[in-house]
Amino acid sequence: MRTLKRNKREIYLCQSYDDNGITKFKEPIPVKVNYNSTASQVNVLNFVDYYSENLQAIVDIETGKLFKQGDRCYIYKKPPQEHDILCKEADYIVNTIPEDSLNSVKINFKRLVREV
Image (tube, rainbow, N blue to C red; front, side):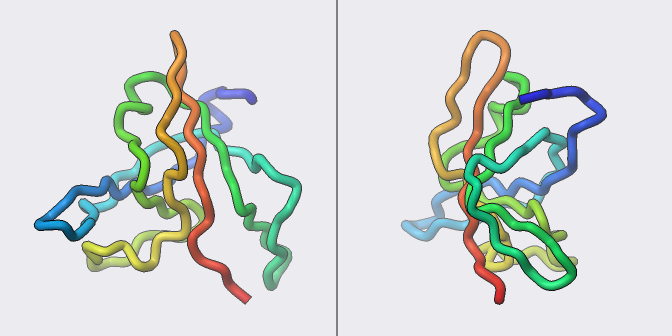
């Protein structure tokens, strides 16, 4: 997977935290990553938009430290104007614990919302 700066696209990350046993999410922060589909199965929506069930991103170590399993992301959607602490409108979740190597971190995203 290429990780050129020109290929990076902006996503919005909502980091999760626990508040008395309830999982809540912080305000979305913009993060530039290069993500690609990991499966051949995609949902074809109106106007020929393609939304993959699983995405994968490879980022540098510093950016990778922002992500953890259970965080939610706005990838194909923009975050709402008013922040929702439950992130009900987010379209992806960090599916696995980010795996790091010497220079990069691999992050897997799973689609949350299915649109018809």
